[in-house]
Length: 141
Image 1 (cartoon, helix red, strand yellow):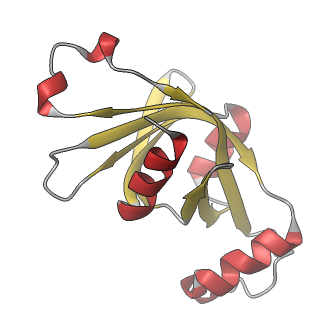
Image 2 (cartoon, rainbow, N blue to C red; image 1 turned 180 degrees about the vertical axis):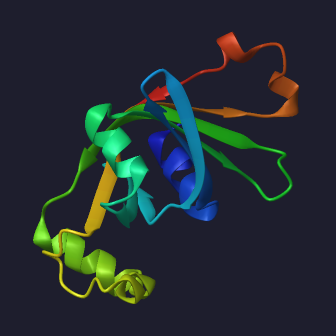
């Protein structure tokens, strides 16, 4: 499998479940990924959310994407990096205009948190892979 196949799958199935670590307790929430490309999977949130505090303390995450019928899933584990680049943050506001409902209209607003999973590994899973998870090929990025 190529990295492009994983990027395409994420972009086609943007609703996903992201797990963080809070002390010794995993925390999972459903998110709408902003986009994915060869540099990682990009997300946006508000910096006051517990998720952002968890990511700052421990950048390790796992994300689960699935097709609507759950016939194929993709799991991504890796590390998150927060994005401070004002051009990327401005693009986020333009492409996700609902953030303006939170009072975020400028890219330097500290309430805007933009982050990406920049390194890790991903793999696909289907029912045919049940009981063979350890043999499924992974792609590192």
